[in-house]
Length: 64
Image (cartoon, rainbow, N blue to C red; front, side):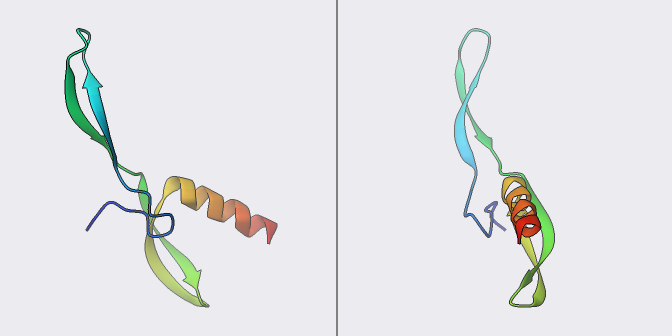
């Protein structure tokens, strides 16, 4: 199971750990995925959504 948001397609990012002496070792920042149940075409469906996308979905739902 890959760490990708099913709505936005956002995936893990990579970069460097930097020690005090500025030595660089590779590291990865994973997406904050949450398992949620949302309505898709009137039916409840479980999806893995990033926390940012979930916050946006909740905000858009209040406007509608």
